[in-house]
Amino acid sequence: MAKTYTVEKFDYHMAEVEIIDKRVKDYLINVGYARWSKAYFTINRTLTMTSNIGESINTTLKAARELPVSSLLEYIRQLIGRWNVINQKKAIESFTDFGKKYDTMLMDNLELSHQMKCPPTRHMETKLIKANVF
Image (tube, rainbow, N blue to C red; front, side):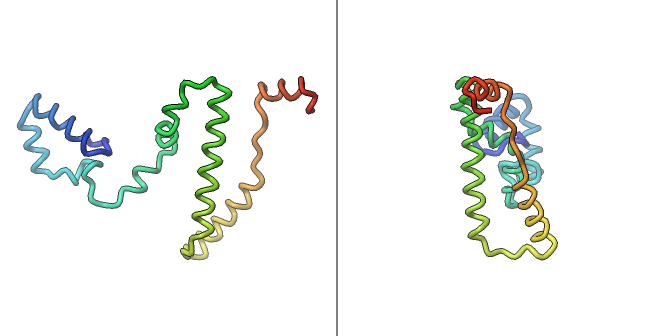
């Protein structure tokens, strides 16, 4: 219950607890849901809900999971590419001043990101060799 993000799932689990022992439910109500439940947490949960990129990708890939591996990898590559373009556009349009320390960190990371390389997989190397690309 504490880890669910939606009120619907929380209420489902709370009903299960009530079936097991109503005293536990009464105790949890008295403590206050906002003190221990993500679904009822009163502070902005954006960082909590989006900090795990794996969860975001898993949710997005539900429909693509049935694809063959090479198609799935291409789908993931395109998905992350789209996310990067969207996030870069938002960042460029942002006029927030983070301060010298964070601006320096962002510029350093941007410079390093331009040096990143993604080598082809062995499967792709084989295809490229057969196609006389190398």
